[in-house]
Length: 270
Image (tube, rainbow, N blue to C red; front, side, top):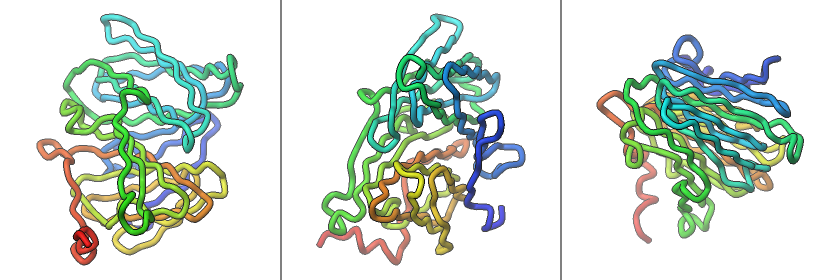
């Protein structure tokens, strides 16, 4: 992967799909298939894989998720007017489960909704889980550091600690205006993808990958190879949310961060 390919500014195609990565020819080193779908009012999309686990994250709008694992069909509805102001819902299923995502905003706001779908190979079976704001781990860090300039709220839908049966990690990070995240700079061997959203279309910031700076814009994304330090910052007046997605290595799951040595002193008390 060339350095100028580590950041992307995609657009929705005529089908309402916006691929970020896939394991064939679009950032294959990320080891994940990630696409954002825009669903119009009353539109429905169906998903199925014999070989891959899948996560369905509602970015904004009103959606209904239906899934059938061969035992008991399930249905859940979710409403998220804003990805900045409102918490998320995420459905996580193993291979072999049929899922449909529908825009039900015709019963409410009558707006398109956006759903991010993350998937990767996993031969194991597990019970599907529908994460709600009440069942999602949500933690705020950095309140007492750097005059609050690195405060961020981390929502973790699933990771190795909570879902060791999964080959993926999926979560969101909310950064107040003019704040830093992934700070102090850290890295890990496993590849990671960030997908950025702002509450305002003119929002912007910067991501640093081993010193190279890339402009963050609404709906941009970073494809971060393992081993690269990746702090980021957003401009004053523009709170930012980004989805963070990691693919575990087989036999070597992501469980920790390695801080950049020259900045590690920032973690010392006092």
